[in-house]
Image (tube, rainbow, N blue to C red; front, top):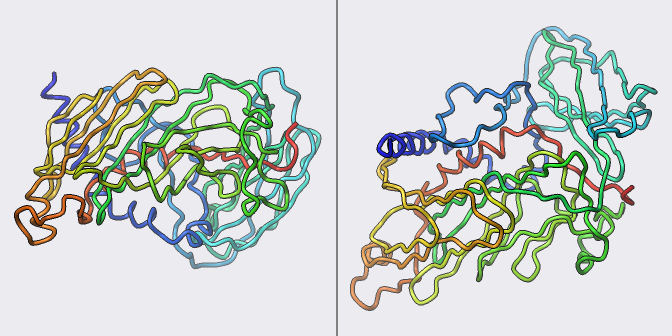
Length: 410
């Protein structure tokens, strides 16, 4: 059985690297371009997308894959319609009635039109006569109890012009839920004199209320980050994620909003409401070397089902702390190894200490002997990046329901 699991992990990693180029291109685009892109679609069902590699045995299942936004279409113009239905997701919560829904239309990832509509007493609105000369994708947003909820419809086209988009909203609470981490994926690659780390967290709020945090729990957000609509959830902190000691150039990514996240005292502090269900967060940072070694020591902030670290293999000496070491596997012309742990308790410490090997130094600097500097690391193209596909399972395939605080929380 152990050999079977090891073989399965190897097959997954090889397949993931083969799929990495497209995903890496999406994740490394300029920030302004990325913000102009429409979010991933929200198809029904729970099956993995066609062609996606099978996950290792015992790996948790994930939501279904998104349908990509097709290219610009041709053909006769048609008129489409969008029906919006907003429902209450909190048990015994009041029925949703009235309020304004905002519908954004995207064409090839570019925002082309924004429409506003009022919901009726049943929480429904219908817009008709939408011109469709090509393929577009609708995104519906609705403010409720201090947070903005989004639902992303399947693409519309002249041959498929009508859509029903359902959106679930929740009551809020300032009582902290016993949130958990379903999965934490850590991808490492060497970049110049640092170790570049990408983490993807799948965080689960097990309640049926959006957690808005407690006012005054931490210092106020930076002035230059404050939005005109006080989009900081009134300074409430909902999530604090620890970073490894020495982490620099921290860049919060997917799941965070620029208005409502900051890095402070070795932690990422989020002020966005934490919605029910699973939400995915991504962060990138650099680890500098110390005495010729990289120390990637992770602290577990909440009970964690699965932790996986993927590291390119060379002649560096790796010491694992609190992790099982998997068998090495080959993808293309590179070797990788996965380090993992399951069912970690809050406060647990795990990680890797990577003592850089001489062969790596010589291949980078062209110098052998004591003059080779152990801190000089070269980007190993594709190293670890392809394994982002595993974490991307969460980032790209989840139903979107990202909140955006809108004024005072109810």
